[in-house]
Length: 147
Image 1 (tube, helix red, strand yellow):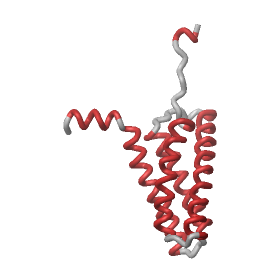
Image 2: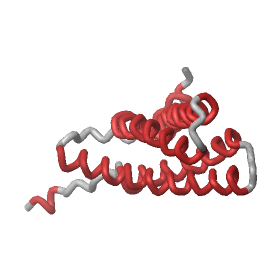
Image 3: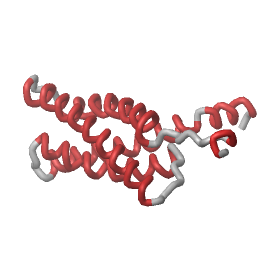
Image 4: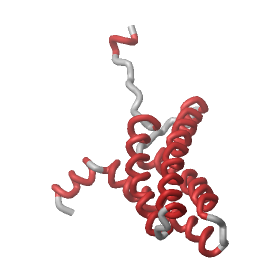
């Protein structure tokens, strides 16, 4: 591997990992949705909710450990991260459900195509929320503040 490529990978490690795990989360979400709708005959919006639950559980673990490298597992930090992560994901779930309802139920669009489009929008918004709110780096007091 060239030195230039290695430096780019190091520089954009977080974004690369988010894309990888976001892609896997999308596969879990989309696959679960398709399984629920097309194989099990579950209606559109309940299928969205089931897919959301499974993909959010996967995303929390992968985002915490590998993407944003939040190494604290003390109770207070873990609960704050879990609460803010779940709250942010609930907000994007509502967006996902709104898109799916309008595109599929109202406009009669293809549910699998619109699920993929909705997931792309949700992934981008989830990254921003995770980066700026959920797993934000806590400011460490400098030596002057400790005195």
